[in-house]
Length: 193
Image (cartoon, rainbow, N blue to C red; front, side):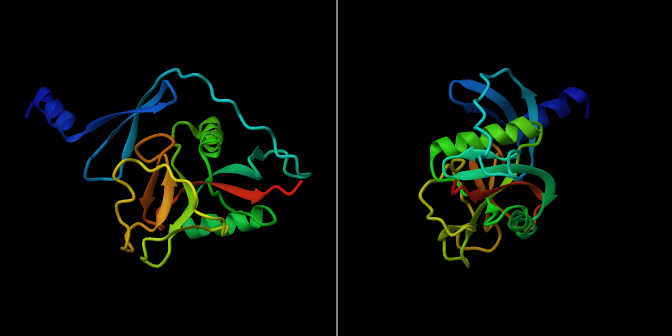
């Protein structure tokens, strides 16, 4: 088989997805329809997002304030449970981040892209409760907002993909995924100042 034939086969197996935030294309991904791998194809210039303000809690100035929470990106790759435990150790009342509106989702994405635009997949604090189809946040806050990749969550009522990640095949959108997978994460705590 020659290189041209192989290239055509590869192109037929991959689906090109343009990922957009607002009016600007931020990054383009190719992803296999039958797999979970998402490989950044190329970056395009986009309007820069506005970083949220620093957290105003003493000792947490390297965290960012979004709504009534302070958040921080952690690059270490941990499974969902390990990431949640690290968040509980990182700050009083800390948990994996919960997202309650579009602005918080955009702020979160902005922080993630600032620190790791080449590999932006992260754990959110969402999970499915015991194969019930009911989604919850690890911090106990209400599930009142979601931004799924079309067709997701695809594994409700099973134990295959019980945890929620962001930036799988579309930047800023969510996916259900195996809780055992290791990836970066964002912690948050309620800002009472």
